[in-house]
Length: 386
Image 1: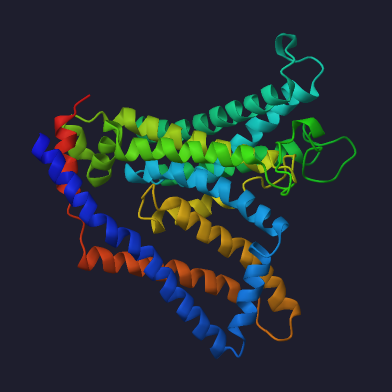
Image 2 (image 1 turned 135 degrees about the vertical axis):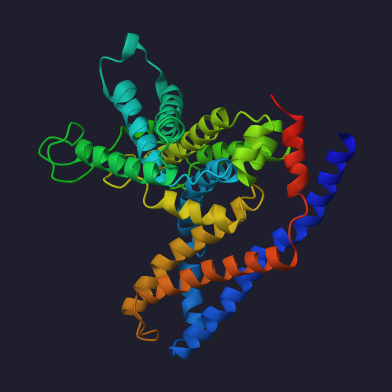
């Protein structure tokens, strides 16, 4: 057993360098192609990059916006590492984020806005924020658990179950905040709740008033936990064995049904936390018609392009955060800057180019540097039958 573990560790170390270089090589190739596309369209690439820089890093406000977008994307991606490693296509992560946002809003209404708090509790600011995080993780985790139950008990593929649950979550959220819904302010036509009390908003940095250190600490803690699970724990080995072949893992003694529930619920809990980040952000503090903002679907791309690596996920998610926030500024530049004179849809083409080139880079990596550690992982699953 010791020799098997040492062999797997050695193979993993040999696989690490190509896995790390692949996304960076893909991004470098994509940047070169983007320059060629802009030159072909008669636009100055430097002007385009200036817009991306202006929209992401130029000012403290832009940097705060970038990190505020990056943190929910990163923590959602960490959750998806669990499910995708286990071979579970958790498309329902967007709905889990929405339910987490609803759970956080419910906590605010229950403990901060209501004069009749449960058991007469006066939790104070920190207590209310903690309850927001707890309820958001519970609601997101339970929503993912429903998808797991549909798969395990109802034999419903998690893709179809996730799509349906996304629709239900979005519809339920719209019911709450629009058309005279129970959470829409009286007399308002806006599809959102009233702003939360000022004392509920997350604490902020002195120089970055639109960014909360709390979401950074929570996201960093989630990253450490996911890395420990994936690279140290036996459960991480079991999830990888399931991802290779769930039937074989079951025959080798892995409790696959239990792991489906745990992986989905864990992912849902982290997605729910991301939903709470979106509604408790210092510049938001309310529930809107689309609290997730497409972050869940973007996180799916992040995990796939990171090759389901927990270590690479924060870096890839940062690149996508820059592309998303910088792309918004670039779109406005395409519309108003006569030095560019390009259609706004070209931004999507440029973003898609990055995705395509990174996918091709991983394909080349798998073709010329195939992973050597797959078989020992299966052997470890046979050793660990707990």
